[in-house]
Structure formats: C-alpha cells, structure tokens
Image: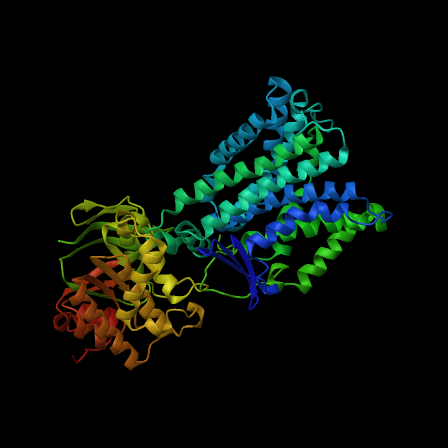
Length: 357
Length: 246
C-alpha cells in the first residue's frame, strides 16, 4: 500500500511507501500541533457555509469577520514577535498598519500599481519607516519606549488631516483595485479570507522556524535580559533593529490587505485606538506563549465583537471590553494556557517585557 | 600582559565611582580585588566588560584597545565575567543558560555549529562545575550555590582567556565558599585562565590569589602580595579594621 494511516496510542501515524513515517499527537493538549490547527483554520469558511440559515448573524458577516481576524492576526503575530525580539512593548502597531495601507492606496490610485506590486511596496516602505524608527529600540526601553511609540499614531493622525489632498482625511482614498475581481460577494469574502490566511500561515511558519532556531534562542535571551545577552556575545543592537524593521513591514501588509479588501482606505478609522487595543489584546487574551496565542486571541476578539452586535447593537464594543476584562481575570495564562503543557525543555520565547526604565 | 587599564574614570553625576585607576594583569595571574562596599570594584568590572563606557582612560586587552568596544565584542575577544547577584535567565534551564553563551561565542559562527551541538557542548561545561544532573532544572528553582556554579559554567562556555569573578562567594556558607574557591583554582589550571577576583571573604581570597589590589573611594590604595597588603596600615584603616592572620 502506498499510504497507510494508523491511529495508535493517541497518535496519528501516516506510513508512505513503507519508507517514510509521519506521526502526530492528537491528544487535545497537543492541538497546538501546527498542522492540525492549520487544517481547522482552512476549513473555517466551509463550516460557516454549512451553518443553518436564520441565525442572528449571517454567513457573509461572519466571513467578513474572519478576514478581519486574519488581518488582526498578522499584526498581532508581528507585534508579538517584535515584543520578544526587542524586549519592548510597541504601543503604536496601528501606525505601521496605516502606513502600509496608505502606501498601497496611493500607489494604486496614483500610479496604477496592482495589488501584487503594492504588496511589495507596502512591505518595503513600511519596513523602511520601521528602520528609520528602529534606533528607538536602542536608546529607549520600558515605559519610555511604550510612550514614544504611542505617539506615532497621533502624529500620523495629524498628518492625515494636514494633507487632506493626499490622504483624504475621513473620506480616505476611494477607488482602490480590489484584491480579486469576482461577481459573488460570498466568493469575494472567501477568496480574500484565503489570501489573508495564506499570508498569516506563511508568517506563522517563518516565525515558528525562527523561534526554534538559534535566532529564536537569542531573541529569547534578549527578551529576558538584554544586558546578559550582550555580555555573552549576542549582538543585541543589530538583532533589535532587524526585528523592529521586518515586523514593521509585516504590519504594513495588514494595511495593504485592508486597502485592497475594502477598495478604499481611510487612515483615521484604523488609527482609532480600537485597532491598537485589538492587536495588543490579541496577544494577551491569546496567552503569553508567543505567536499561536496571538492568532487565537485575534479570532476571539474580532468574533466576540461581531457575535455581540446582533444582541446588544451599538453597545457591542462595550460588551466586548467587558468580556475581555472577564477573560483577562479568569484566564491569566490566556486561551493558549488552556491547552499548553509547560515543556520548558523546548524553550520557545514568551512575551516578557522588562519594566526597567 | 593580558589587561592594561590606564587612568580609568567613571562618574555617576557628581560621584566619581572610579577615579584614575590604572592596573596591569599578566597572563595566568590570579589577582584579588578587595575594598569596602561602594569602593568601585564592580564599576571597574563593568568598565572592563563593557557594561559601562568610561568617562576617561583606556583599556587594552592583549594589545587591542577595547575602550570603545561593545560588550559582545569583548566577549568574543576572550573576556568573560560573573555577576555579584547572579544574572541568569530564570525561565530557561541550566543547560540553556550555558548554551546561549556558546551560541554567542566566536567559535559558534566560525565552526558553523548547530543549536544541538551547542547544547551538547553546554553539557560538558555543566559537568565541569558539577551541575550535570541539574541540566534540565529551571534556573529559578536552583539554590544560590548552584546558580553561582552555573554562572561560572556560563562564563567558561564563552571560551575566555580572562575572567572577572564578582563576589562569587556572597551568600554562601563556609563549605560552599571553600568548594567554589577550589573550583576557581581548578578552572584556572585546566583552562589556563587569567582571573580578576573581587571578593569580601578575605580568609579565602588571601589564600587563593597571588596579588591583591585594594580599592577605596574609587582609587587603588594598595597593591601587592596578600601577606603584605593585609599589614598595610592604609588598608587596615580603610577596609580590614584589624590585621588578618593568614
């Protein structure tokens, strides 16, 4: 037999040509197994389409929410990675999202660049902005760094109103090419979901590989004690600048997705603190365990808001914050902590921000 | 000569923590550095290891001016240190705490080592200090004595030629302190190390070093063989209080 599947002792084993053997643990506590999680994630739209009709939330609303959850996931993964790699908490991730969004919108609108080219430009230019700001990771730490980065969205906000002719203020930049041209709105949502999912999964894969390599090991040391890292030969400055630059570029990709998904981009909407809170809380609600928790957290935050809308209408955000507070109180280790078994031998860095100024 | 510090100055606001300090340490020497609290011993170590940048003076290590070099560059040149209060990564195991010192070392890149190879080598250093059985224990669960040993193992893992040992016996009982002193001596012989040893436990340091430097108020006030230094009236007045019988 070419392929033989076997379930034994809580493990799923696949034999190929009696030569190669792939095994996965399928115990609930091992659901963090990336492959199983990825399959579940890929199947989400199908599950929504199979939902019975007549529920308070329609499938298109949910599909749209899934897309937004992916966008928040991408930013939250990048933000968690940045926090670990620099040992500093950036309070302005939405600034980088908006930079990416404007780059995509302006290049598409003014120079006719398609989504593929604006993708590269959004990543590249946002990364350059990140590089310009990266000395912050060397000259400031703790609360100072947090406060400085918190100012960035406000500066962008002022800039957007100052140059209305370029950024369009609340109106934004309309008429951006859609991610893909299809007739059916449901198909559009599903395709956009899979595009954002592909980006999120690629990002997860790369970050996971980094965390399990010597680089992840070094990032963990920087995250825990930067001075010790430097005392034992780790080039902290170079690593922090690199991480800050690249993760800023990745946050810019979230802006690119938003601009091409909605077909217009109004930075003022995304500079609002709600996006910042969504990104930050995704890491916290998901759990301190690095990146996978961020995805869980992003889905929890976005879906909780949309689930609450049919029941409490305009108070949905208020309800969401109440739910989040309860989750923070009841789950100190976050959603990920429900499944995670402490296995410190496989050290993967967790978010830990020094309070030292 | 391994280390030559010339007229080092370090100020913190109006306080001059290190005031025109010059010292020379030859290869293979074990030099003790003693002095009362706040005399500038740890600041001197921080200057040599690169934690602090001096406000004046020059540091030369094996003929290379390292005054402006970053701490990670100094480690790669062969300078290692331990900390007065152990600074280990408490969420990592003992093995991992030694492994990252190998990952950061010069030979890791030169020999194109893998993370697994670094972990294997870390086992060797843990064995040397007697912590092999504790390799998978989180550092936060280790007692102070073992944390001190682990700091020595971590310093050794950088493949140093010069180690600065900062109050390695602080908080240890007499038996543990004796063990650490013997270990430092053994490491010196096995790895051909040059050691600058900051310590308050005079009973042990006077037996273990060849030369002693005494610091007070940021200056070196005396220097020489232990039996001479402890009789120096300036040292007795500033630090010891009474003569030490060796």
